Length: 204
Image 1 (cartoon, rainbow, N blue to C red):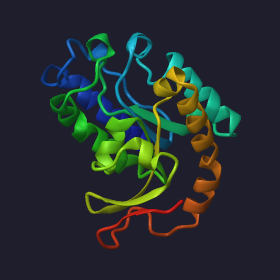
Image 2: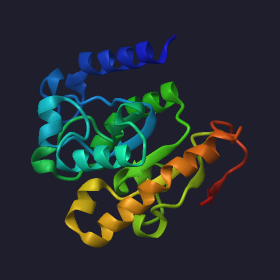
Image 3: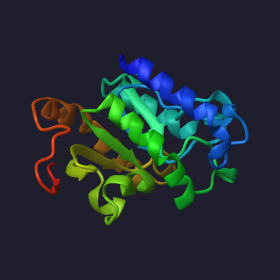
């Protein structure tokens, strides 16, 4: 089945069962992902909830503009979130909310089988590297055994954090500049989505 068809089916299933999900009071509360290279944020904000698109507010504009500056079209980057509904006052997602949306996020990963996963912020980082701090690993490509599959994960600061401080903004920009080189390297690998032992290793 075509990936686009599978993703549409997944989104339709989520909207049909929205009443079983935390935070959602109507199906229009759900904000689905879009694109190809896999980037995972935390949760929709106000503008994302209004437009029903991920990363379209101030931090999203920074991300999309920065991608264009390094030659990557936002339309070819699958941008999604750990949870699909805006938390009240944009608070952090709870453990229960993350767990409720985990199956749909896992299905997105299963359908797309991305060459590279970019985690934006500490909540998406914890999905793949739960025992590290983002300040320790940002900008370093990791090979991770995730649910029996080998995946390449690049942790980055969330663009919202970059907007709050010059130092983090500089790190965000520098880490993003590495993406084209990392993608070129990853394309040469034949190990993606294949298990080769219990691996958690920094590569770059």
